[in-house]
Length: 415
Image 1 (tube, rainbow, N blue to C red):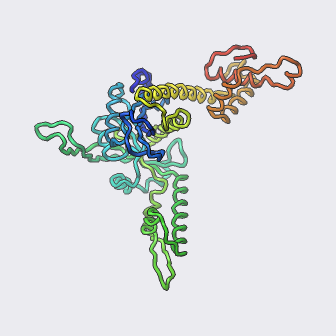
Image 2: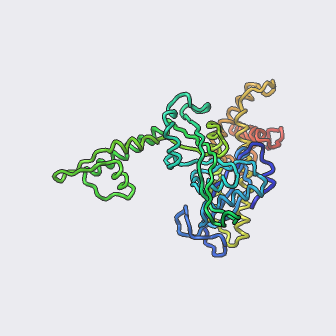
Image 3: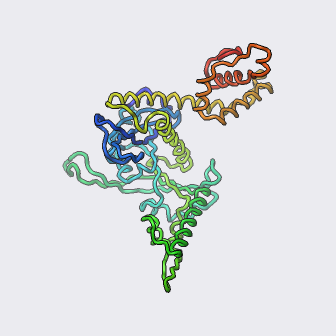
């Protein structure tokens, strides 16, 4: 269900985030319900919910229902068509590594849609491009300007993609394979914190398996057996097992500790690519919010019309929530700071704003909404009541509403 009005309000230079999640359903009337991948693991039919979000405004743009069992490449194709319908051809689509297969990137390159996606560093053609320049990742010269623990480099390559022809021509038939080369920018990064964490985790896991093998344990999971075959050389002498670490495989594994890769067909700036990709986490938060508070994990709509109505209600609610979060984020950036206005820069006023900022940082959005849902006004009519009850709560609430742009009365009684 595309929303052209939402798309029209996107600022210039904005990027579009695309992601999808699954919804379980008990209904047999939903045409998109299929047996497929189910994150909940409840064995029920699922529906894929695809969504677009603006990265700058964090506002939802469009959502759609899709059958769960369709390939990712078809979902990407439908997403690109939606962007065209919404007149967002000049925008960039940002995806996670769930859409990083070669077929998906081929579809994006073929459609002419700009994209930025995370890929696995161990993917064959990416590894071939990164390994010759891996030494540059340890150089302090490649530290990112906004991160003192992440270094990054950019590699420009020409990579061939293979896809099938959609229509027949004189030289080919529909369905024939076409091979074309596209220019891609591979942004490779290494994070010190992630590197240490991955390295310690790998060493701990190998040490545990080594100890278990030497103790005679034989019941291992398939994943553990694979690690034993790769990293340990096991010998047995007079019934006693000895395990020695395969140094060559170990060195290959630690080479990619803390390394992650972004691939784009149009963005050549390493730092800007990471800055843009980090903001896509908003869509994960949106899906999490929808599943925890918006009944998205298992919507109770029996018919397609009811389900679309619930999705639309969640879509509108999500817009209000993200709008309020942006207002709160902007308010916290200026609260408690002098602005040059003598009436505002009084010590008492700045101290009150600092207390408000502290309360906003310690409280979740849900807690703040519950507070305003329960507390409308606190007043004390007697002298004893005024000694017992503080009017700071009312003052803080009034300041909060003013900070987010809500019109309030100047009186200390009420909002």
